[in-house]
Length: 208
Length: 372
Image (cartoon, rainbow over all chains, first blue to last red; front, side, top):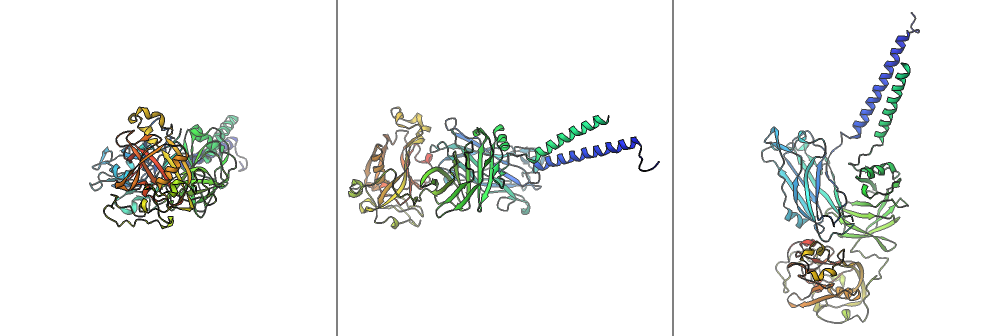
């Protein structure tokens, strides 16, 4: 049998093989594009989620989520953020719990919500919300990427009451001035100033 | 068999290609979307924002100034390709904005301009041909964000701080002091001023203790009070300022309001919207308030308070102190600061923004800081 004259069965197998190969290639490409679409290699981003437009006739309070997209490999026993707002338009009432847990004294299973601290009275005087978390146990109660949910990781929530000076069409910006998730090894810390932590500011827009 | 395999392969190929191409144009509305070089945001993207009732952010940059559009899906009625690129240029006093889009967007959108330094006032106005077209809100302590709600595209605007007088339009739009205006010519105890508005003395923040009129030290950088009896009005020099009167805090405290006064409160709380008014060099906030109220037929009642060497504003628009609770009354704010002295002792300077605001909580509900 000469090489140029392959048996029909062999030809068929080659065709099927090539077809399956192309199919697999396409599937791989598809998966790759899907994977890249989610930008898994992007930076860690702390976001003040902009809510839908608010109607003053419906409510005089609002709660905004502060979310984190991801953490790095390190553990973060301390965190802080400074958020500037306009106290003539908004009264900062305080913070509420989110759903990002910390380790509870280093236990793998036991988790609890962090005790964020801030002083609303002082925040309203200065127009700057300073919030801090400090693990005083030397890292046993630290933030950790393994404790993040797959999505919607709310670090904490900011609660405001509208001042009487607010009117339809007003915009209240909530602007990060600083944000840090500090690791014991400083080089692994996530910080806005060093560019290792992205931030996205939020807005409250007063609608009808 | 061959045909079946070919058909299956063709189908899978089609599906995969479609899925892949879909992913290439996939827009993640949870992330800021960069405005393309040609500025065009496609209809399909806006459809997605609308259908998902999402809040999308489109970012761009012009001459090293970053800007972003915030679009609410709930606001979108009509979708089409829109050009969201803008050209930003710093001007002498503000920022010039040129919209590339020539037609209306089909939805209201919020344009936020991020400037690297602190804006020189707590609010701003966008002008076109000398006319104010948009009110601009300002936020930030070290850097600033200027927000404009764009309902209708106006090709070219210039954003100026509110205390800056628009140089091409020095004529007062609402109020003009006249030569024989009693406020400027009479020497009564309510009037105050010094020879030249440029001569205003500013606090260096080093003073301690109260002055003879029981006034606490004036914060650093703020104008020191003047005494009405030393005033000298120069009616040859005219300046302008922005003046407004509002009582929107009452709307949040209607249960505390004297029921007989309910009809006096405008539905939006605004008694006098921000209005450009003229004044003579050396006049005080009180002088201008008197004239503005008179010319706009707004009731105003005041009494002289010797201990503070100033007029005290008891009521405006028939809304008096204590009408809406024990802590209610009128306050004034100039360029975002509540002076710690009476309005007869505040000598106005060119381009300042004066707001009379009704408080129901000793100023805490209108953003006053500190104590008297």
